Amino acid sequence: MSHTYSHNLVHIVFSTKDRRKLIPAHFQPKLWRYMAGTCQKQKILVHSIGGTEDHIHVLLQIPATLPLAKAVLLVKSNSTRWANQGQEKLVWQEGYAAFSVSAAREAAWNNAELLWHLRAEPLFSVPFMDTIDGLTTVAGKALLAPAPM
Image (cartoon, rainbow, N blue to C red; front, top):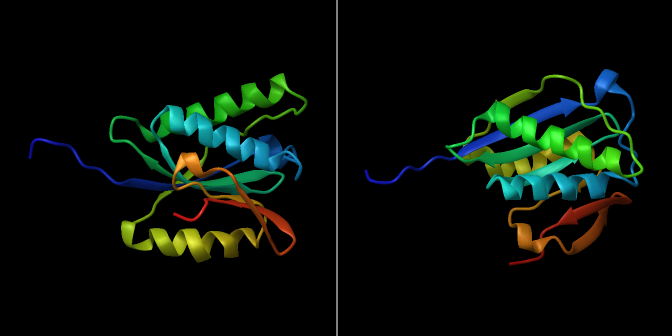
């Protein structure tokens, strides 16, 4: 085989330092967008980003050439720098949890498992980065989703 194929789909969870509530609801959509943009620059495909005031869940498809630890470091360090240059103060706790997600479970994870886990908290879902223009609500909370294809 002359080409490399990989489908490294990973559910990553990390929290703010000491689980402090550093990500207020009004800031969450901006932070999710920024993190998605950081990933896009590194050729990391973002399937979902969402979380609460003290932790975040991301479902990423990481390229074969990028180690998981480096991908997480890029997302955490860039988002911290960006937030702290603005009005927000953000510090991530060291470490993270990462779980592989099979291609067969991907659709279920995106559509049901994450929404159940987050209980309709703000979710940023971006299968394709050029569709970040739809804004709707679920259970009275912001839901950013891709435009119909």
